[in-house]
Image 1 (tube, helix red, strand yellow):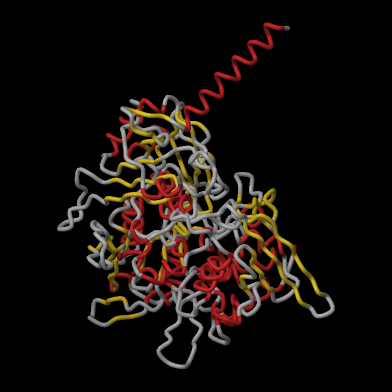
Image 2 (cartoon, rainbow, N blue to C red; image 1 turned 90 degrees about the vertical axis):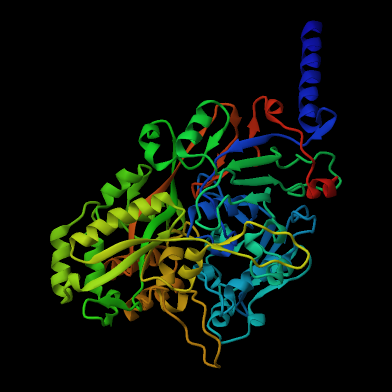
Length: 616
């Protein structure tokens, strides 16, 4: 017995020594703050506004690491508290008043050490509800009193039922006795992440520059170099994004160790490697995680990669208001013709595109396979709704739709706009382009380049910043046809389907006159029948609501305002030396508690960041 006790004590002492060593290490007399892990997370991103990240999987992945939300959706589809400590639902049946008091945790801080407050939530939500702001996420807030009216200009934004009772308490007043679980599900969306008013309002480019951002998530943007030759937008020899531990994340300021809540010190993302170099570096142990496998090599990893379905669908937007050039020199709003839209959809071989992308499934509806049916993660909307589109191309149906449209495809010329930096999107566009050319249209693929941003705030030395013209033109409805990764704001099918209804579209209004005109979906799609279905679904609950949403999706399939092509999957490679990489329900990964075996061997001596020094 004595030997066992002695052994236990020795083991405990060794364990404590190891743990303390994780907190306090030195190399050549310099403090080391933790593991610096070389990874390849995703494609480069140039706009990190969480309210605008629903059109780009890479932007969503990074925003999910640097911005915290009130609640999160775990891998099993269960709602978990994040920055929220508790919430209380209050019902006054006599006066028909319904509200929720949400209390935030006291240890939520921004990366500059400023406490995260209820006012930050109020600002972020009212920003989305501002009539001038475009966001598909606005319908997530329409259960709040006067939220819908404020978005449509029928009342002041100050009348919306969102109030900061004090530093940590948020009061939300509702339009009635709503489905509170559905509302909590909405609060898992990164699009509704709190934001600091002073930071956002100070500079229009705040989300593009590390010097002008503060972050509330486990990581903050420490350094970025996009690595572009500004004259021709080709990769240079150095392109890097460094995500550094937010030293204030879920950590009392008097806590002894900086890694109390976030284990790794830095995630170092190198964008300068070719696909072949990236995979070689992973195989040789120089990179420990690959979040985006190069397209040309994906077939080699389809049986070994960790694959997860997402709430994202690669989707083509057709602008019904775009003037398309004709052979006779005139123009026509080609995509306002429903039969043209249906023909273009029928001509696409979704299965062939999914096979090309490798980590994808053919899109069989507008709502992806992971969305809940009636708020239940055990039953999926797509399973109940079945397939609305064929995985294979249907050339006979496409030609029939063209005949019904009354047009001659050879008379029309248009381009498919895609971001120039996204090789997967370009590869898909080339396949879609070929299919539409086979129908007789004159179609080209138009990669949209970045633009140099030379704007600087006084006293700042900010270099190598770019404007993502593709994203900016998308939100300005500046394309005839474009391709995006349409990410569902939440796992509720309503969040995908509602924006196609005019009063739920979330489109920013032109406020130059006193008249407020509610705009339809950004494609220009407007249908009274569809509006009625979504209005009924908004007011309904339970099985009735689910049935109405299925009817709405079927009606969309008959109109095809946008064309879903594939349901995206994430496919990742993780070294055996890297542990505790977690995946959420959206299909994206978290690195908050990752550990790297023998991490000290990979460290170069570095000076602590300003935030780390402030956190001491």
